[in-house]
Image (cartoon, rainbow, N blue to C red; front, side):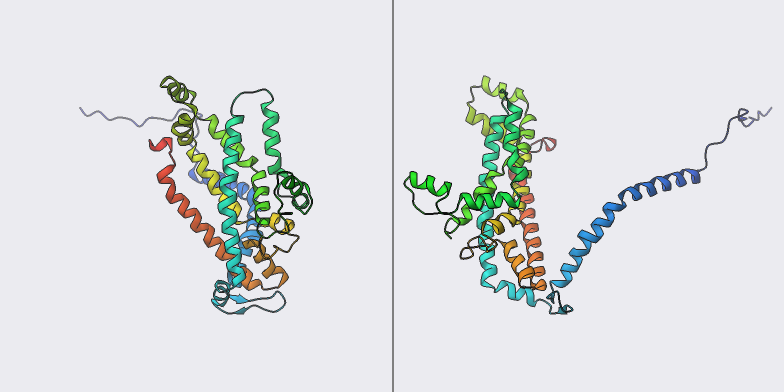
Length: 319
């Protein structure tokens, strides 16, 4: 006898599952809603960021003065730029600013973060006070105040004379005016300080307790525990502040009274780019300068990312 299994019957009143087409339609509606919400950002990116970037890349290979149609000149803008003494001076001033301002700013930020990481009364007030300059430091008004502080017979000049140093105001001295910009950059250490504080909060207390039991002092605990543990945060701050330093413009332009001087002492790269593009109406030359800066910053970023393998320790990698 052969047994034949009957096909199971569907219980009465139970519907079949929804067709895959209905699910696809629902996903399309959800995607459409998402794109509609993103459309303001997409439009702004295309019209205000991507579009101008593509246009400037084209203008970098043209002779364009804003008043006549651009004329294709190939690599002439780049050739002229590399042989321009003022362009070379702007590169020199910018590199000097980056090399001096960035490490000093990060050292101060880390030092203050180490102090504020300890529990003390009024800790929130101290953090807010140290962070405040980062909020207002980029304003034009602060640039004017800084110019007044470092002018002849101002507070800084009088303080120097009390200490027996008579070099006059820094603003009018080509040997010192760049250091006034460096001081302004260091004064705005609040943003990297907050990032360092976040990194310090992630260091396990057990490591410090074990080091104290082994007899390690504060300096040894800092070098062997604190610094390796916050190295990813340190790398992030070095990368971010280096990029910001290459892009410095407002402080140099305002403190130098729009002259980027005296004697081109504060002729940072972006200041010379502004002069060529908007004062001399050489938009092709300025676009070539802008894309050269983009490539230079990209190379610096690539070098920093390559170097992190030697000094940045990520917990996930088991280092």
